[in-house]
Image (tube, rainbow, N blue to C red; front, side, top):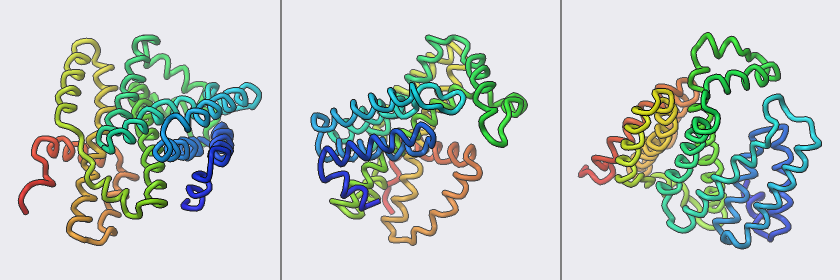
Length: 290
């Protein structure tokens, strides 16, 4: 990865070629979209938005045109990389301007929340819309069926789940770009910065107000936004654990069980860490006397 970052930072031609190749690959292999967005985020963080604008627009244009001629997976008629690049671009600009991962994460999740709200405003019945989408998309996915989503009730949470995943993918791209920047110019800098990730206290009160209004308007909208906003404080809770390990010079292997739980029991892990993150906003565990 360090070699990739070094190659990208040699100039606009290099970063443009890598971003375009990864963007095209993402039409068939979705994880490539995260790496494509991360490469662009790296260039923005180091060079600024003016030099990176050409790469951003050219990648979007190429992927969109290629999508018109290439056969894509069912249900993915519009390139996901384009949907991802926009919030990544905005969040990266915030990180570059403020040097605050907390504000950048808040921006990324804000974009995801706007996506969830926009679906309600322009689609209306989001459950029905995602139901029809799943009927088209699931036949192309191995070991997946539409009926499974109906039986376990997850079809009712699809709008919030997709918005939350968009937020997580945005943050994953942003953090990967920041990590690559650290690998080149500030080794170990990313881990220190992440351990200090802190969501400003006013954000909690703004989120509470938004949730209160959404509760009055729609129970479904409230559920969607709860899923999206939980990501913010999940990351803050995770950052606290990293801070404890780093500050006390403990072995990072101690974090392994936490990541195992996130992978195998995501609902419990995300809720638990989000609760810790919310409490940290009020109590600031990292500043408490030892």
